[in-house]
Length: 194
Image (cartoon, rainbow, N blue to C red):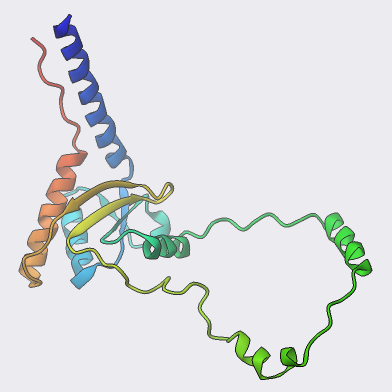
């Protein structure tokens, strides 16, 4: 009985390993977000030369994104790169009904302050849509994330901090990242049954 339970548990673990490797391998095209000290360039080189993932320069062709940060700034950047579809317009019939409803309502009186200096300073022309949406905030310090474009889920991550920022060390760090990703993408064979 215990042997059957153990075989079942081992089989379940193997299936989970295969499923996670399949999830990683499912996104074969990757776009690299700009990273600290240009690490993205070295990672792109290693991913390509080691045949781990296909690197694309057109963000719309990517299934996954590699970044060194997650959070609100990253989410805002993803929304800029992959805007949601526009909402459906209301039918014309509804607009006519709304016009008739507003005719009966009294209009609010305007105050002199609304016409003066306060109204001119209230809304500026060069005001950004979202503060901090394009800036580089909260950069990671050695953590790399693989994010699914559609679900925005982190499907893989690793901590590989370069010892220094020389080109040689950045290349070594990129190589370690690519090797680790390739290893994690490879399905693990189930252990031999006795």
